[in-house]
Image (cartoon, rainbow, N blue to C red; front, side, top):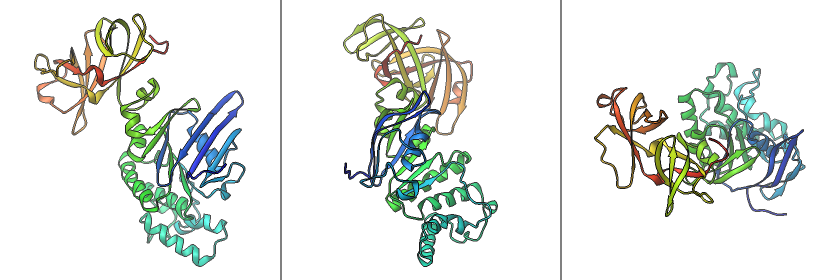
Length: 365
């Protein structure tokens, strides 16, 4: 089977005892894509990355890189680079020796090694550090060295296994920008494993959300965020308020739901009728908050009174925690207006019925 994709997986499976870690997964990644494998711990994303790398054998299925079937080939023969979470730098080797290690293993001619090393040091902005040792570097510099080592042989594809997990928040933000720059400059696909939703949405062009060894949804990151196809994708991406209620009436495309004594209107999901339960996921940034009696609602919007329990100021916006009349709490991310809404104040929260995502409830109450 020939393919023109930079990476293609065809019906890949992997089982450990009774656990199917990767369950019949197929995927295509194109040249120049920054592709994220996103999911919680145990979803199978790292196992899938290791199968692509050749560090795990696929129980079933095939792996193609650059149009070639590499399913049976060892890692060094696949044309890949790899960056790990824990850097894995040799402490007794200099920065230059660490970066050039893959070239040495390939027995590349020494002048060519020097050329490749100079190129990648400039790319990751580590020129002048080649004679230092890892214990003389900051966390961000160590991460740059690990990235340089993955890129120095100019691989066909770079695989990254949660490479920013051990960095602090500010350094992580800086490295996110840098990795997008690296990827754009060398124009090879990056396949990036993470459990961090914000990281995946910031870095990637496309995302595959994994659960229990399979893909729940694969697509453009904006598509996944704005049009989730399953309750899991809707709940996993973004800060959500989760409402589970019983349908008491239906009208056109909308259902009227009883949520612990509060009646709400929401879009009716497929195959749901009166008496069924709906799971409704409402993003906090799709909501608004105002002092009680001062809301100027958009036509058709839902308005609920409540009491402001707490405020977390985040700069351009704040997270407002509101207790409603049924003692349920909602989080609203809105522009800050702390002086006029102290904690304990009576407030109103509002949103449009179509702002959330509705799904048939999966047996939860």
